[in-house]
Length: 265
Image (cartoon, rainbow, N blue to C red):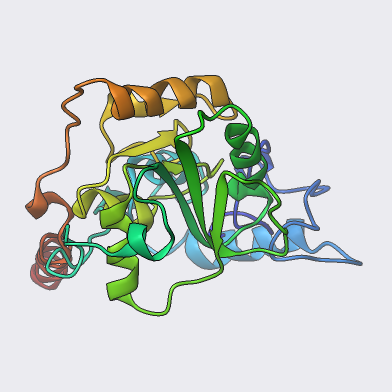
C-alpha cells in the first residue's frame, strides 16, 4: 500500500509501477465505492517519500523486496528481514485436538487464516475436499459466512488462545496454505515450528520458508493433493527450517543491528 495509489494487494495489475491511472480494482480492499483517488494518492505518496534521502525500507520477504525494487521507492535502500515467531510457544506438544473432534483415525489437512476472503482460497479447499480419500479430512480454521455441508470438512470459527492454536498445529499431519497472495504468512512459520509440514502456492512470499519441494502452482489442486499424499503415505523427510531462523529473537537482533548501524552512519 505504501507504493500503490489504492490497493493493498495489487494482484494482476502493474499500474503501481507507472502511476495508478484508471484503477481497475477500486472495490478491492480498502474499498472505494464512488470516486477513485488512486492516481492522486500515488502522486502524493511519490512527492512525500521519494525525495527523502535517509530511508531504509525493510521488507519481510524477498518477494516484497522485489516489488519495492520496481516501485518509485527503488531509489532507497531496501533490505529483507524475515518475520519471526515465539518458538518457545510455538512448538510441538501432546495434543487432545483429535480426540475432541473424533478424528483419531483420520489424516488431517489444516487450512487456517483469521478471516477467509476471496484471495485466501476457500474455493480451492472445497475442490480439494471432493478428491480426498475416506480417511482424509480438512480442518478449516477462521471466520467465514460459508456454511460447510461437506462431510470431510470440520470448521472451527476461531481459536480462543495461543495454546489452543498450538494444539491444532500439533495435531495435524500437514497444513495447506491456499492463499493466492501472502507477503510472508505467519501461519506458515507457526505450523512449521510446531512440526507440521506446510504446502503452499508458489505465490508471493508464501513458499519462501517452506521446503521448496512442497510448493504448487496457484489453483492447481491436483498438484497440491499429490504433495499431500507424499507426506501422508511416503517416507518423505520434510526439511523444516532451523529454530533460530524463524525465531523472533533472530528477527529482533537484525532490527537492532540495523538501528545501531543507522545511528552510527
